Each structure stands twice: as C-alpha cells, then as structure tokens.
Amino acid sequence: MSEEKLYLYPLWLRIWHWTNAFLFLVLIFTGLSLQYAGIESTLIRFDIAVSLHNIAGIILTISFVFFVFANRFTSNSNYYRIKRKGFIKRLLKQFRYYTYGVFIHEPTPFPVSQKRKFNPLQKLSYVMVMYLMMPVIIITGFALLFPEVNLENVFGIAGIYLTDLLHIVTGFVLSVFMIVHIYFCTFGKTVWSNFKSMFTGWH
Ligand code: HEM
Image (cartoon, rainbow, N blue to C red):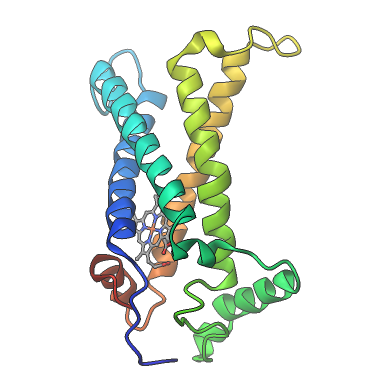
C-alpha cells in the first residue's frame, strides 16, 4: 500500500459528512422513539421527538442538496462514477478480500490512490445510499410532513400507509448501512486511521 499522504476529503465534504452523521443519529433516536411510543412510555417525549425529527430531517435535506451540488461541481464526483465493464468482477474480488483475504493479511486488491478513493464495494454502497436511498427517505419524509400530497387509495390501501412503510424500511436499511459503514471504516491502516482522515482530510 502506498505510504504517500493524499488529500482526499476536502473541507466541504468533511463538514457535510459530520453534519450528516450527527443528524442521522438524531433521526434514528427520535425515529425509534416515535416508532415504539406507547401511551405511557416513550424514549423521548412524543411532541419533542416529533419536532426534533422534523427539524433534523429538514436540515438533513438542505445538507443533502448541498452534497449533490458540491459533488457535481467538484472533482469528488469522479470517485462516484461506476465503470460498468468488469464491475461485478471487481465487486467479487473486493468481497473475497473482506471475507477471506483480510484475515490472512493479503494486500488490498484496490489500494487507495489520488485516482481511486473507494474500493468497488464502497463505491457501490455510497452511490446507492447517496443517490437512491437518501432521495427516497427525504421525499417520503416530506410526504409524511405534508400528508395531503399522498394518494388517498392505492389498490385498497391508504397511500400514506405505503409512504410510511417505505420511509421506515428505508430508514432501517440506512441505519444498517451506517453500522456496517462504521465497521468497514475500521479496516484502514490502523483501526482509527480512516476516522482521523475524515477529520483532517488527509489519507
Ligand atoms: C457516526 C456515523 C459515521 C461515521 C463514524 C462515519 C465514518 C466515515 C469515515 C471514517 C469515512 C472515510 C472513509 C471512507 O471514505 O470510507 C466516511 C466516508 C463516507 N461516509 Fe460516513 N460515517 C458515518 C455516517 C455516515 C452516514 C449516515 C452516511 C450517509 C447516509 C455516510 C456516508 C459517507 C460517504 C458517502 C462517505 C464518502 C465521502 C467521500 O469521500 O466522498 N456516513 N464515513
């Protein structure tokens, strides 16, 4: 692996990333509190959880739009481009490394360089999360905030119920992503090196 110092995480990206991570934690805690609220017992008082969830969701939307534009108009977008030819093969190679190679101290098949920040699995998961799941959770979130925009009836089921289901399922998948994401971030040079990079900008 290269020992060279690489500046891979510009300031805008670091600010977006940690704001996003913090808002995610707020949304998960308040979301779970709303989901499992009983008549008497709630993790966070119901009205407070609703307000915090709405406010965090709106700030998350603003920060997401900022990410999309900043990523579109800076060179960071190059890291999100998937070259289709041979991608499955590269994915499988990375998968084999994570499930086997890493445990027998094989060298990483896709070392980080100025041209390649992400391995194929990271690239796929970041693209799916940022350009598919984030839009879904944001759009369904707003549809729940303004219930009148929902279809009244979809094949005999209330539209708002389907919107809610999609919001909750996507929230669950994103929460699992976050846990897996943090786990894989420990696969750096040391356990902490990737986390340090996201603060300093330097890999
Ligand atoms: C406490 C929670 C989180 C921690 C500790 C964390 C940690 C990190 C670290 C260390 C990196 C740099 C290593 C790498 O590029 O893979 C990173 C990158 C990234 N994280 Fe997270 N993360 C968290 C939450 C999230 C969430 C909730 C999302 C999205 C929903 C997210 C999306 C990303 C993306 C897209 C990148 C790549 C950014 C780029 O370089 O263009 N992270 N994260």
